[in-house]
Amino acid sequence: MASVTLRAVREDHGWTQQELARRMGVSQTIISLWEHGTRALPRRRLAQLQNLGVELDPTALPMRKAVVAAGVDFAQELANLGYPGLAHYQNGEPNWNPAQLLMLALAQNQLDRRMAEALPWLVFRYYEMDWQWVCREAKLQDLQNRLGFTLLLANELAAQKHHVEAAHRLSGVEQKLRRSLLVKEDTYCNDRMTEAERRWLREQRPSEAAVWNLLSDLQPEHLTHVA
Picture 1 (spheres, rainbow, N blue to C red):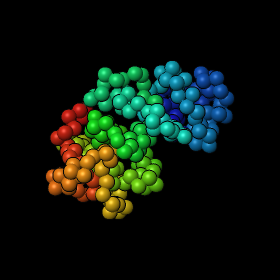
Picture 2: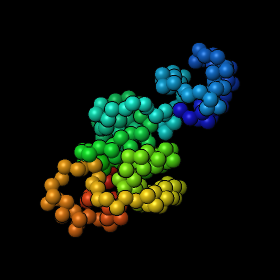
Picture 3: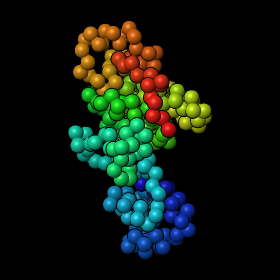
């Protein structure tokens, strides 16, 4: 959880630092360190805050270290973050920062089509995620084209929903990311497609995919589960 968020939820509940410290069983000094960002709030404390009735914004959840993507149940995690298309997989509260889950999904060479279709929704729903972190990670992993395509689709969804704030934010991030567009052709998390499929997509892909040098037929009208 971001330090500014911890302070905000504390003040929303009318608690002083001393009161929150008492409720969490820590010192007031520790609360102050968390709020000023001097010390990171441990993940185990998030459940404790939830038990105190604090509603946590998933974008404030701390990033996990040494993550093995093979152990991530993308369907369940997307459902826990509120994706209606996979609601039947929901099993508890969100425990992944949507920014980190997005980057893990985009890094997959073979991602289930249903998961791929959920990613523009994830970007649209959590358009206030830490884009500086996301774009940095994308460039480090050469995933900026996949991310840019996702942003473009999400931006079109925001425009269709007349969500001006989200559309403005997503458009700005996508335009900045275009400066680092990769010339190399890529797929949208589907590297196992045959050469025949690749040839067909080069001719038939929508403009959104062509802009980002991706082989994909995904279009906004395919994203039927946008809340």
